[in-house]
Length: 239
Figure 1 (cartoon, rainbow, N blue to C red):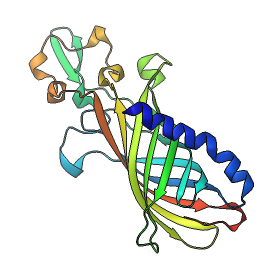
Figure 2: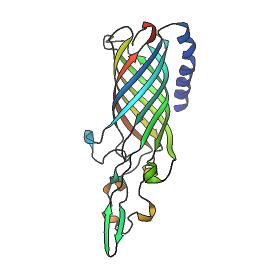
Figure 3: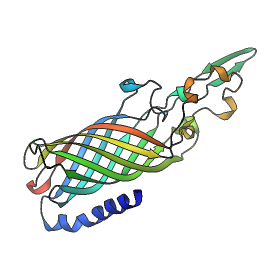
Figure 4: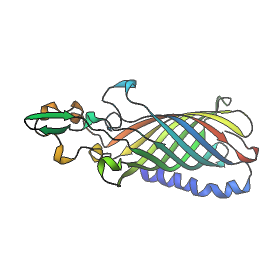
């Protein structure tokens, strides 16, 4: 199923440049700011359920071209700086003489999401401009070098689905409110364990956090709510 979707989005992204060159005002830039709720099992959120999980500020940028009326395709980039939760990893064990001390360790990471995306206008309620969005790309998570002593990143496939509303302030400027689900495949939270094996608590496993027992599904869902500002050169349609 993913191959046909990939081919469609890539075809749209590659085919939009000639259309944009032929007609002025079909190029659109959309910077955005919002909040990201990472999947509860990702270790980038808390172990609490519901809407009380940790939210992180995020920023993004889309560059879209009109393929035809109501259909646009292009590229996207999003960045977030969450902190891992120590509730998903074994405690660090510090031994001093005959005394023991357990403490959780977390780290600040940088998450990049990037790829190709396409939007399709919904043909009703034109005043508020509803639309649907889909995309395919990659995610890259960069660990804290000082905590992990490594510059390697964790990278995997990403698929996004969502939608929102677009309101035209003028012929060249618009506002967008968008909710999207960024789905990561084959995510393994153990790759972000900040506790070195030499000091990991294996002496008192019953005292380790309950989050260690949570399963890690092969597909996780990360929700992003963002407010965007669209700019269309040459006074083209802001939707």
